[in-house]
Image 1: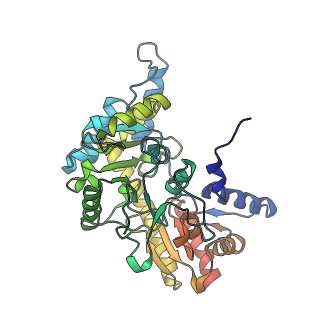
Image 2: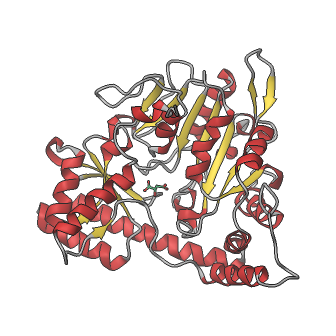
Image 3: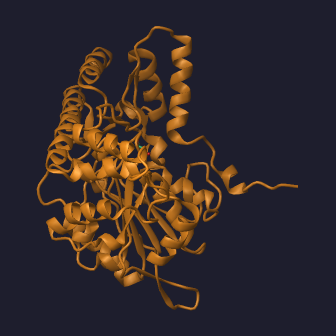
Length: 410
Ligand code: MLT
């Protein structure tokens, strides 16, 4: 008899975003003709940059020609892309990351979930609350937690509340954490970590022989000076941190798929006898066994974001989304909501009024203004009473949505 992985049964609801889509589809079906404005999932709407499209076409042409055709690519990704990333995202900013430490993939969602596989079952995992739900859900799927309590917390995860009281910055855990997921700029709160904050975490990890899994998917949205763009800006981080970066939001690759993960040569973890092992060969072994890489035309298109024109083009689009975020922030603030994020992040995080539950706020917005956002509770129990708007809709939709909410809440 075939047995299921029962850990999946611990996950009560479906994955957050498909669950939202399901509710929105049901609403659309029962209200035909309604114009629903989607500001829920962080999915981009603006087209790929011209330089990216040009390179993408060239890549496809090369695949159609016997002289330039390519089969399986190098497992870690093509050298031209890894070098471009190392130089532009790191070395030009005086951050010591080598192309050798970069692994190209088809998404940070997959990488942040899959990375757990190379670490032991007995690790204590610390996760911010609220945060991108993939970290907790994949920890559950991997069988590393107990059951979920009535208040939404899984046994055996160290939850680090990120609330108004601590400016949405997690405190160092009191108990020892072995693997620590951090995400800055944060999804969903939009909070950023200063150098001092990241240094505390790196020092903690060095002291406790922990590893930080640092998700920097929204790094390109940092607008304020002196906010670190990479955990490797902190001394010693190369010994204790993995960094995930994605082109999804940076360059509009949500449908095109390209990301990368940095695993420095110096990063080590223990076996059960206390002997230290490099982490990078384990990830290499995992990827070469289970993953055949991102397609050549996509990698070629990805490299174009580092060309002179490509850099300018993607900056223009990011500015457009950040301006959207500013419009949303300003509108809700003017209606008396407490609003966070949206400055170094495409996400606006607001507190509902009168302690309204976040799924009730979701229903109200959908039913009365035909707008979709994301309930804070979907990101963790401490997200209850909050709501997230994504700033990736087109400008016209954002403006229309703000007109509708003004009518609803004023
Ligand atoms: C989000 O809306 O939180 C993100 O788009 C989800 C993701 O990047 O997978």
